[in-house]
Amino acid sequence: GLAQAHVATGDLTAGRDFAEECLHIRRDVGDQKGEGDIRRILGWLEVEAENMTAAREHLVASLNRALELKDSRGMSEALAIMALTDKQAVAAAIGEPAATG
Image (tube, helix red, strand yellow):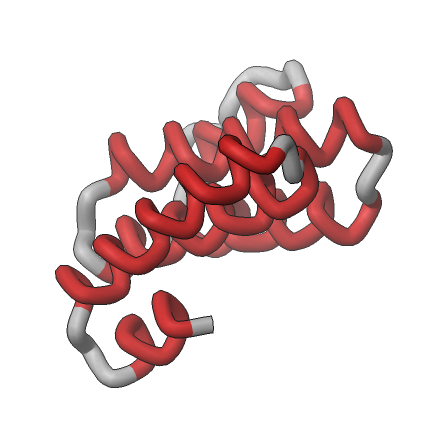
């Protein structure tokens, strides 16, 4: 949606604002899958902003929601972003020690 469009144009602040607004709406209406999807978008946005702590928080939350809902697409997308950006988060998410080096 709008958040992704702003991220694509490099306007991370506007992208974050739209995504956070959408996250609140999804929570208010009880859309758990949508909440997971938005957390994944926020995770990618934080990767783009080089804020890895916030990115990990959003991506792990997205993965956990996908696991709860048995949403295989959501799981694979969250893990794919983590794999591209944060090997330690992937290892923690799947319960294995992170490889070093």
